[in-house]
Image (cartoon, rainbow over all chains, first blue to last red):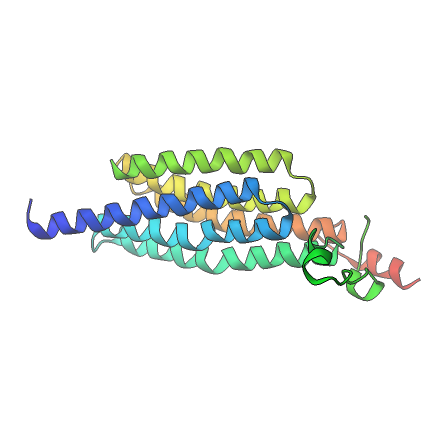
Length: 125
Length: 96
């Protein structure tokens, strides 16, 4: 095994292990954080850091082939749609009247009351 | 070997996200957990393809990524308008 192959293997290991670390950190945050708004942050870790690092490690393992092109396509797609769907979920929760649990404690101000203007077209709750 | 490590990590993460999915107090926690679970599934399928040296699995992973995004948006739209197709009746009700 040449020196270049050894170096690529080491870099790939580093990407894989750090990506696994970020995936687990995101999942633990999803489980343990106190309310919905803080869980959004934890999920975004998996969507950005975990996906990018794991796909970079797989790209290095695949070399210059069609597989790398497919990996980059999936990575770019996840990189665009992850924040988009996170934003959609956050927007839907805000419109439906969900407010941060600690909002009053942090700012000393009551959360904005739910009116017909910011309630959106339908709020069955 | 490195793929096995990453697959193990993703399995652990999937179990944790599933606990949040079944125990989430609000609807939006559950939608968020489903979305996160889908991302984990995409990663898992790609890694399994590399582990078994059949990278054709990546096509399936791409399909899962597409379905995951569209499914999340569809669920959110359904729970906001109570319909996926037309939303006209709901708007009329509010104006009255």
